[in-house]
Image (cartoon, rainbow, N blue to C red; front, side, top):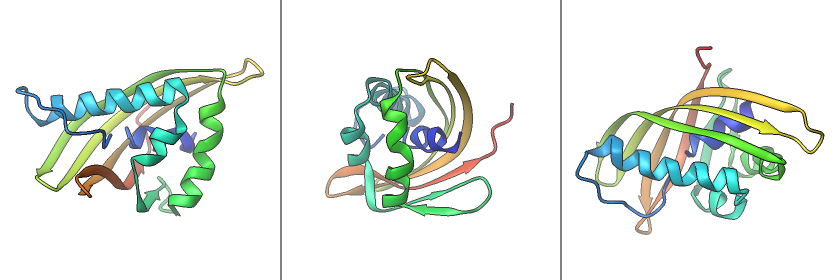
Length: 146
């Protein structure tokens, strides 16, 4: 389910910089863990706040969606009866004001009808510091290796 892939993508993170002596992967994993908690808690407002105004989501087939289109597609995921799972940061490149985060995500969502949806995703999130806060500007989803 591509909607969840992007949520993961936000793993989506941009939450205030967290200091870590374990390096950039540990630092960004803490951020992605916070994003996962947002998704599980259904906190769509905080999730949207992580997205830059010029956010672009590139789907595995190469199609692109802008911020408004992405938000519309993500909205139903935040209304699920139950969400579990999360994201794992695999690689971090860059520093300072620009960072690329390679991630893997695995989610299970249960709708109000009780039907479960399972999703796996891998991708790269591009983060930039905008106004002193980390914002995701681009997510490139790739087909998950299942």
